Amino acid sequence: MYSVAIYRQLSLFRVMKIEELADRVPSNGLFRTGQILSGHRQPAHVRRQLDRWVKSGRVLQLRRSVYLLQKPYVSSAAHPFAVGNALKKASYVSLQSALAHYGMIPEYVPVTTSVTTGRPEECDTPIGRFQFRHISTARFFGFEEMEIAPDQQVLIASPSKALVDLLYLTPRSDNPDYLRELRLNEPESFDRDALDAVVEQLGSSKVERAIRKVIELWEEDP
Image 1 (cartoon, rainbow, N blue to C red):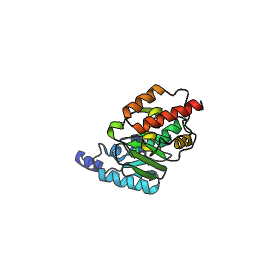
Image 2 (image 1 turned 90 degrees about the vertical axis):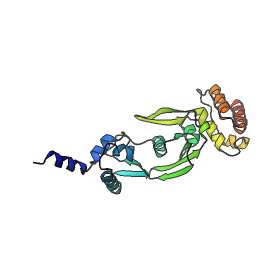
Image 3 (image 1 turned 180 degrees about the vertical axis):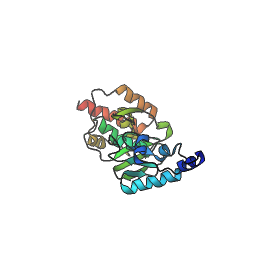
Image 4 (image 1 turned 120 degrees about the vertical axis):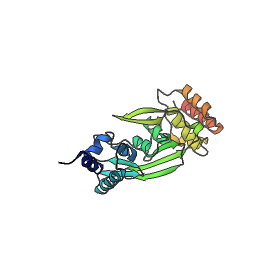
């Protein structure tokens, strides 16, 4: 029989099984390496096991330190908005992606776009492309946590902030031709008072001009 000391030594080199990983991560399979290394006394062994899972196709690496466990070890597919949140911590889904979710623009949006206080970048992953637009810390507001799919919470801009973010980050967005091309819809539940508050807090004269024209277009074609 092994002594207690030998059992402890053997436990240091225990290989994590894929089923144990599945128990540690959310039901959609999204996780960061920190989640599975926490409390483990041999991180190097876990990283090597993770590399083997990636090579076998049981885990997808989306970017450094961000992974996605594959079926049959997960119960639900990761929503693109949840993936966007996971790829960059200080971010929320906004612009065309959020506007399409709220039914405010008619086009299908193939790229998931988020706003971040970090550096702007595009991430091409095995499950799609994700874009991150930079905004200052002072303008990083107007988002909320929402259940985008069962057991999947995401940070997403409010309808007003998604529109304002788009207008703020798009050059010459106060051009009437550009605004007409957007074909913006005003949902019945849209709160114009909330829109005014967001515009005032953002503090951009270009956005103020653009919003006035958006309202005019909505009034012309209700």
